[in-house]
Length: 219
Image: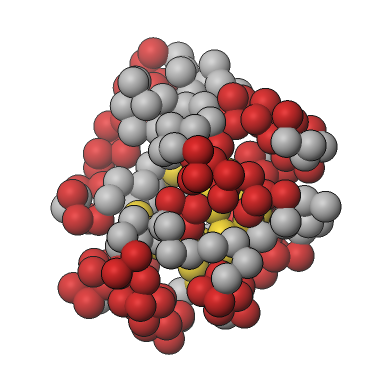
């Protein structure tokens, strides 16, 4: 399904709270072997998605095991909370992760109703050098019209630099092409939207956050 949707490289990012981190490398190796045997042309990399309440339980070596990017520019996928009452704790833990030497890719801020695209919280994240990522599932309306509208605004205003599939299972499969169609209807140029699912994610993985911040804006 992923390959049919146009993707050739996937970073597997299970929730830390649902995962034994030490198992991720060998489980991904098993998946790679199965893909090779099935002749599916998909590259798979290891990773995980952190929540604010995971941070205090992980040491630096554990964080490093799920980090992305080249040496000297390592970053973590850090999800925005779905409940407004957790925003302060989310921002506090983000500071701790940066103090420990990691950049942050902020996952699905559009799904938190208390984090608005042009609000104070987003301004703080961007001023700290974080990169914002919205979900394809948000853009296609899976999480409701308000979330869809916030996701579109993150893209149209140039605040978000990446679109993630956030695929979980076959019934919530890859939908990047569908998300690009939504953005086209919203007036975002196809070339600009395509960068969010191809060039920018690849730059994050190969070069790190500073390089991603230097890429051309959506406008």
